[in-house]
Amino acid sequence: MKRMTDYKVYLVIFLLAAFSGLMVFALFSTQREEEDLGQFYLDQAFAKTGANNVVSAIYLHYRAYDTLLEVLVFSAAVLGVSLFARWEKDDSGGVDRRSSVESSVIEGSGALLFSPVVLLGVYITFSAHLGPGGGFAGGVIGGTAVLLVSLAIGAREVGSRFNEERLKRFEYLIIFLLLSFVFFSLSDWGIALLEGMELSSLIAINAAIGLKVFIGTWAVLHFFIEHRGEV
Amino acid sequence: MLIFLLLLMPLTALAVLFQNKLLNGVIVLGVFSLLSSAVYFLLGAPDVAVTEGAIGVALVTFIYVIALSDQGRLKVIGEEVPRFLFREGGKLKGVDYEILQGFAREQGLELEVELASREQLPYRIAEGEKDFIAGAFYPTPAQEEQFSLSLGYQQGHLVELPLREGSDGERIGIFEGVPVEEIEDNLEDEANFSQYRGVAEMISAYQRGDIDRIVIDHARLGNVMDEIGSEVERGEDFPHLGTIEYVFAIDKEREELHSDFQKYLKQLLEEGELERLIRKYFSQTGI
Image (cartoon, rainbow over all chains, first blue to last red):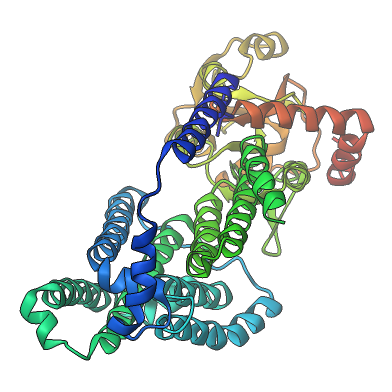
């Protein structure tokens, strides 16, 4: 690995400075006319969706398309990693490395922390309508919990307990369900049909996103570990 | 508080760029994420703060660490040569091994040594699988071009294995890159030299009857004698035929690793640590 040559470092610094300058310029030059829009959400969101957390109400109801595309972006990233990993597998011939971690402290704390961390992920996923949280954060937290276990007992061991193919099909199924549900819930007759069930649909979407992100996170970590060796 | 954090953020971002070790850069990047997470929280966006904390601090850092775990290894390939690089009771030992171990510790790298025959060594480096060649290595002229070489850290003495019975001993097998002129001066008779890339090739040539004698460095004598089942006593005195210098070979693309290693080796030499190491492994026979 070569170090970056000096002019490249200066180029990066220059670009960063220019970008920050632009941001400051944009900050002072935009006029703010949308303040009543914010007030509109504050007034309406609770009554309409039943969610105490207005942020959740916005990104799962008013701006559900945004969220959906974000989930798709994440899925595309996971897909990219898995494709690259498979491509690399052919010429490396599957390097067999055993876990380099042989510390009972790590093993013990991995086992001890796994359940609380997963629980935290689940809590953050399912309580997003009440307080800060959401499917994204909860899913990632759950994924890092699995990472913790793979640090303790080795990723290969953890990976062998999952059926990778079925997991992947399951992930695509969730994406499909999410897509169809959001399109359904935003159509006219969908809105009519879901009258009075907005809160439950928020929780359901969050749970689906959380599960999807959890699987995706674990998949990415698993691919990396498989091809780069244990941590 | 908010102003302080906001000022700290560009500073950490710059600090990432100026880290010498990639792993340190990743850790500082994690600190940057942590700071931005705190800023989001102070600005009243706890949702974003939670997500940033989970993704930026935990997930991304872990992914980088895993991706870099390959970079954290010093990948060495070497020929098994007694006293230089050998296995004893399932553990690697030897002068070369201890030098590399010290170097790896200083660089914060994990040492990973694979043993292979001399014939295979150059290919494994060329494929980018390994960084280092060790194990009483001396290069052929082509390999001198191909790799960055370290200082010569120890001299090897060339000796000959006795004649095959019933031959005149004209045909001599040597390694590629061994100084032929010096051997010719020291030999009494005329000789034809055939060059081989490694011990295995040389032995099979000997067994086929292509060569009558083998000239090889003293360190590898044991390897050859075991293979051909020579009856010669190990402790016997062999006439000195020439001198070679053992070096480490390093992947030419790893300039920084090469200069770091040269510095380390020079330091060992100046502190007399190298001499102590060599004495430790060579005391029994006093070669």
